[in-house]
Length: 113
Image 1 (spheres, rainbow, N blue to C red):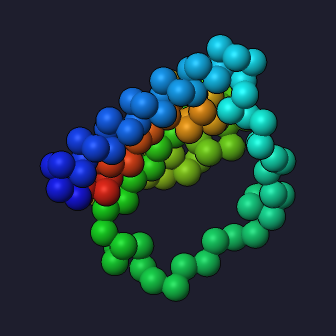
Image 2 (spheres, helix red, strand yellow):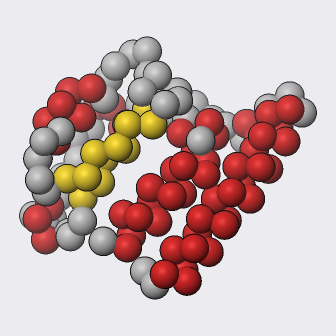
């Protein structure tokens, strides 16, 4: 990702963060279309057709305030693994709602590697 595109992504992230804050101030209007999480994402294993080392840059973004802890075991597996970039975000499970600007920064950084 070029420096210009990375800066544009950051600017968009700041705009989205402002809009989400405005919606939260107006009774969480941004959550009107939230639906239940499909159970099969917990019961069906992910099958890869390629080796992860062939993907390129690997990034794991974990929400710090996730009371169920169902992702901790995956985070523990990649912490310290040089193939992975690990980031802990101080928010609940819905990072895209709680910290959209920070998430966009992390995704832009991951895309640029």
